[in-house]
Length: 224
Image 1 (tube, one colour):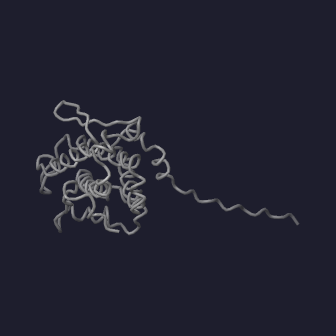
Image 2 (cartoon, one colour):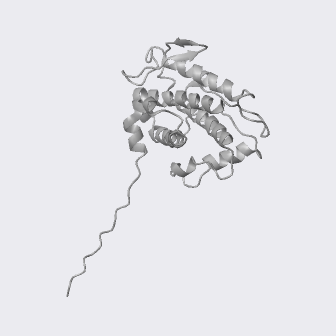
Image 3 (cartoon, helix red, strand yellow):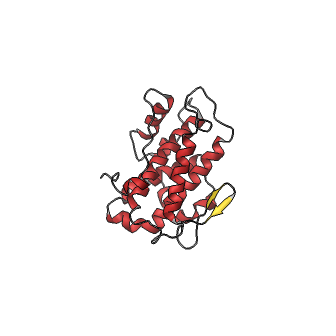
């Protein structure tokens, strides 16, 4: 199913791509062209011999693309009237922080600000070096953590507030797949504190469960 046409151009950001032949292009193929698409545990692991910052950069941009698509799916029903606050249920409300100011926003306003901010950060050559021979800044991982913390909030809002709409259009499997991959990535690299992930605690524990192989019972030998 194609979800790209939903939500209009206002909410949908242009998908970011990597130039063919570059390290990031090859890393993206390794990260998201995996043969077993359900083996997220293996998909998120840093490939042997590769730079951790390049891996974080590639995955950050791809998850930005995915959250962008997910939000575009619910954009028609997520507005200042239906979602006057950026929240994940009654217990969790998120505020936009910028230049030392904390601002209360509606959900669409928060998400729009977030997508614009990530776009600005990932296109800033001082933070995301455009060429492979340039060094990443010392604060790079700190910025990555902030990006993922805020992207998580979009998932939390969508799951708690718009899951019915997602189900109605048959996009629940797509949402679960994207979030499960995201969840394995942030868990593996410890990008978000456990407290921040509380709004989706039940979903998280379900998605991270691994099926245990049943041990075969040994047949008791009869003494003859």
